[in-house]
Length: 285
Image 1 (cartoon, helix red, strand yellow):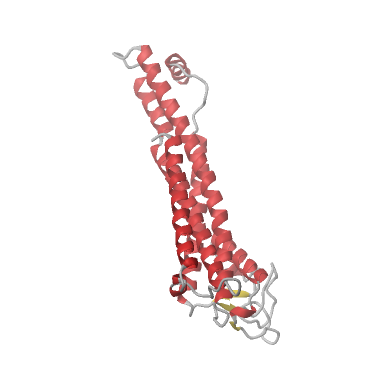
Image 2 (cartoon, rainbow, N blue to C red):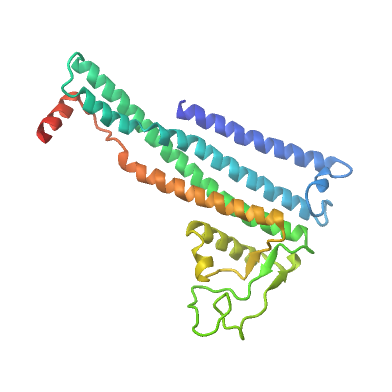
């Protein structure tokens, strides 16, 4: 499928999803009793407390981020799986010193394969860039959803206060608690009321989740944290959301590393003829 046609289709899907979300918002705001209040937490009064609408906007950002990531995967994965450059090297070994095939036919085959390999490489690079942009939007959406839900449910307990936030602090010797802080000095952990959670707290919590996903939970293992908050396991919805976020970040990291390693297979752009291939084969022999 041509890359331009694929990009147009993905753009239309993105626009269509946002139009649907705008339609849902308009129908809820113009109705006597906003129907979004039946499915989302918070208040939906116009001009007053509109925390429910902020939750909706955060969810729209989350859906947009996922859409962009899916678009990047749709462009990146097919190009990675084609393996056109490997096919060119395999076909080179079969055609060298093979009779019955004219030189012009051999050269035409190599030119066609080379163009396909270059197109696949460019498509994979474009898909990787789109995927990374979508991942940045996903991090922003995670912060927004966490903060807006905390504001919409002020009496809830989405977070637990960690005994102490450690920033690259060494674990002291002697009798310590599970966090690496001496038992006598470690404050008690407990539930944190959503009303007392601020934006900077959620931002530090988001950094903690990204770091845990990128370095395979190493901060949790070594007791290095950027936030005094952890998710409350008793809040099943938020716990599933945190788990899904970490999984997606880890998946993107692994896929990006694989795609970058495959860049060494990028074929050369200059024109290559069957004569140069045969000459190189004779030199090796």
